[in-house]
Length: 611
Image (cartoon, rainbow, N blue to C red; front, side, top):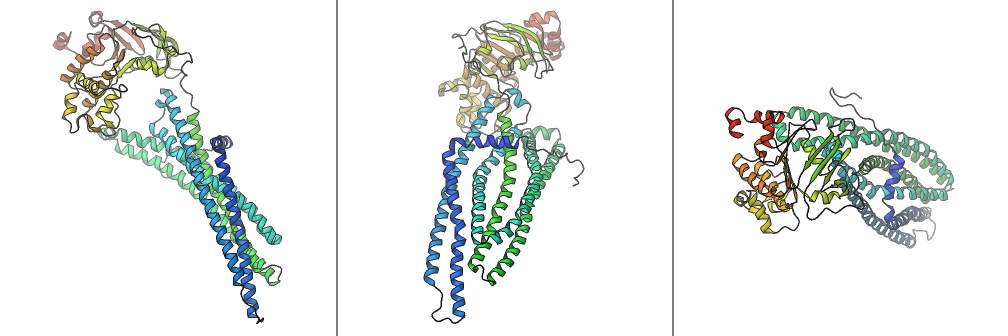
């Protein structure tokens, strides 16, 4: 089929391990096997009741037909035996009622099984995401990850809820109907079975063809989610740089690819029902004609023919159900495989079993000893990097973009692990701490503001569990945020929107600073913490931060060099190396890389005044 110009090439993928994925999916049912056995039992009983109903109904039809024929022939005293037919109808009502009760019960239990299974799967995914290293998230869009967590799991949920019961019902119906057909007429049963290979062949051909498109559909759906999430998260940037047309064009390409996978998977799988219906209709005509001759020759009763035709239609029904379930299972296995790929991702190196408890009180001495690191194995960013931060010192880290400043902090917090060398706090290798214990030693105020949907009070209180109202307000006052908070209609109870768009960028930054102040940790990390506030507020916040950092070992990443002139030690980084270090005056006196950076920000008279 021809596509439009510019359309992305379709990715013809198959499930990598269909049987293994299906088997692994089945393991989720094992803890609920007793409930599942009950579902199977109720399903079998309900199906058996439904199977014997046509046979019983056929007896009523035969009795009615015989009474009418005798009456038509003028036989004295002949007539319809209403008492007999009434008993048959009463029995049928009881059987149909029992079947409905069993169906209701099995669906109720199966709903619980399905939701409990999916609940466990989602919990495992959430736990897994918490254990995955930062590099995993760096290499994937948020939308693609969300697609696996939400869309793929929902697909699995739908199959567990609907597909399993249908499979059981289909198997029992197929076997039970075949037995009932044989008891009525082996000859007519043979005629019905002739069409069975044709039905199986059609199912196999269509299912095999559509499987690859179901897999591709799930993958492209993740790509689309990733693109939409990315564009909406940065919609202001898209508009500022006039990227709307390019964004829409890429969306259209992915959407067309999703359309191609979607309609081909649905169209090809949809061919199954018409093909099977055609085969079944041919079989129905043959059985009806042959049955008519047998009734004419009085080798079979008319009620049995009615029952047999009913059975022959039901005989095709489970095959049709199986065809539909086959499509559902293909989509489910494709979705489950994507979920299992996420669950099988390499995790962070686990915390040591005999983890060391951080010293109390903590001195705050930090050392980098011959550290080697690269985001990719073949691209080393840092080689033999060493530094020494003495207790209580303020260490400023400066350098051009991409020099490795934030990487240094990421290694210190163990968002990434070193490839060589070691990092110590008070002489203890940070890999000997639990990550949670290590990160509690640091308070972080980042350039990238993150606030969640909730009140301003809750966002500040995120810095420390069980913080009191007075402590929250005190932290906001130190961060110079208390004044603007009180000018809001609801003050500290003001609810922030999802992206906190009801606050300015500078106000959001002040809230994160207040959060860091409330945490009151032994050491601090400030990544351009005042970059989004005005000059006057920056001076006030800088004074507050200096008071907060007093007596604490602090690491300050700065682009505006005027903010770190009072630092005890300035590390100048370039291309992952510390090229210079010293105090502000010492580095200016060297007239090297730092002096060049400084003069680029303060020229002429301003430079003299600033120095």
